[in-house]
Length: 94
Length: 485
Image 1: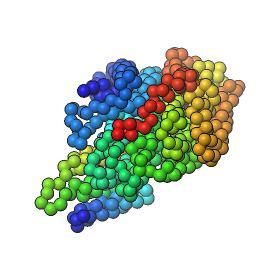
Image 2 (image 1 turned 135 degrees about the vertical axis):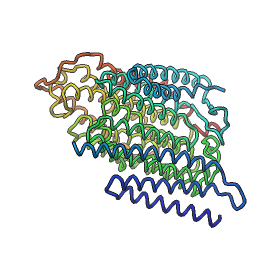
Image 3 (image 1 turned 45 degrees about the vertical axis):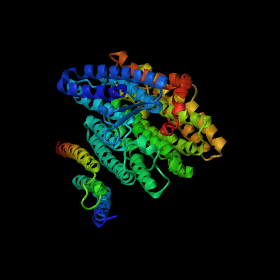
Image 4 (image 1 turned 30 degrees about the vertical axis):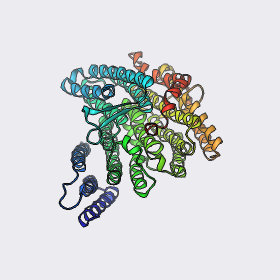
């Protein structure tokens, strides 16, 4: 176990916990959406830490590819959440 | 290389794109795709029945780098369920959405949902399962919001945020698996998983995510509003298919992939939550004021029964007794899918004709919509678990396994749940057959009542009387990954 790997992994777990807390406790929709993204970033960080294979060695490419896919999914989900949020706001004005 | 497993995914996916390009032909495209998908699933089923489990490496890339599709008896049985229910609900949708705009919004997302569901059922790679879980969640949310009302959008948003947290927990579990075992291919993993903290942590994270998605008590809170406020064909698919997908993954993980690493006692947790779901869901269905809300709470209860099977299956040693109990679990899941989709479609029909679905004002329904009322009654037979429905046989097996293992606790739960189910279904029928002012419009086209009726007949008669064939098909594959070792 290396210092860099552990730092990344712990940061990832911390972000996950922070995001989870925000997603459950926040009242505003925007706050919740951002919290979910923070939560997701925590998981992605975990994958980045896993890819580390020691100094001087190329990192494992597979977790990186997974994170890229994960980011695409997260962006689409965020877009859908925002679109639904706007529909909700528009229905307030009617 | 056999490419048959690709088609149940590619046909709806391709049709979804076509439905975007030709919005005015979308209903035709959707129905044609549904028929083609059903044909592909039928061919796949025949192959699996004659040759056993099929594994297909996508694009010829071997697992490790590539992704494998795997069609075994369990996956194929659920594929058949989903393509039949989706075809019937889609057929119903052609009459349900009256204006062309709604049709063209509905079909692409509907087909996308089907593609995601089928990809999930066939996937043998944990990360790919995460992706399909997200695709399924996103398309389900979009469908749930199609109703357009404020309540529907609020419910859809809650469905989305809760679902996203669930899939992130699942993904965190996937990360733990990769960190420890260095692969996400389930066929490779099956021989690797050891009873150790890393495996348990990964399973705990994935389970937490899937329990949210499968709406197991006490994480069911998002389900009733989302399912009750969606358009009827969507409610049918959400309740019958989408939650089942998460239950299917739970079966794969708990009864299959992680089974060698687990203490059988740990499955009691799932059983206890399932028992609580049966009681809580049935009680709320009994008190529901609206028919669709009743159907949604009934889903919470019926999913509970599926989880009661987990401690029984974990305790049973491999052999005929376990195979029988496993077949009963699959039969229960299938019967619920057909019965609940029939119930939701019938409820949608009543809602459209009467302008509401308040249970206490259903008087006169039996006279105005005799076929739909008959459908309600048939679906009720399957939900209560009266013979000859599939639920009857499944509950029978559930109880006899519980007796054999001395797990007495489940017996009063099943009895109470069945009694309450009888209570809520007879309450609906009591009002439907009662006198009413006949505010119902005359039904223009009787054929619109047909899809729901057919689904109810499958649940009550076909699955019950044909259960032996299903058992023979599913049971030999009961130890799924284990059989590959």
